[in-house]
Amino acid sequence: LIVVVGPVVQQWKREIESKTKPVLSCMILGGTRPKNLSRELMKHNIVIATFNRVRLCFKADLHPLFSVKWHQIVLDESQEIRNPITQTTQAVLKLSGKHRW
Image (cartoon, rainbow, N blue to C red; front, side, top):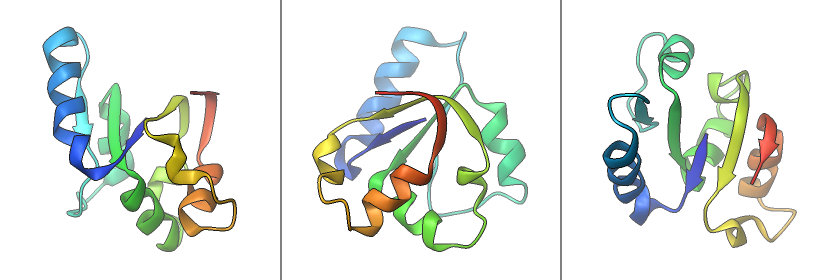
């Protein structure tokens, strides 16, 4: 899982695909929710989400984003979570992962 600020989502996806396609698959977690999001998340090697999307998913009760045990969680622009009392910080801290960067 890669968590980024909104303006760089597409840039991250392009860079990942240019360096890893067709070996790794990448999806952007957006506003439209597939029928079986849990399965959709597991189909991809890399999922990209914005800090805002993670916060919104956190507010949605039992969102699949928080039930996945991510192998690695990467925070780009981690200053987005510098304030420990914001919903964004609380949401990111609730993500479950083996490694965090």
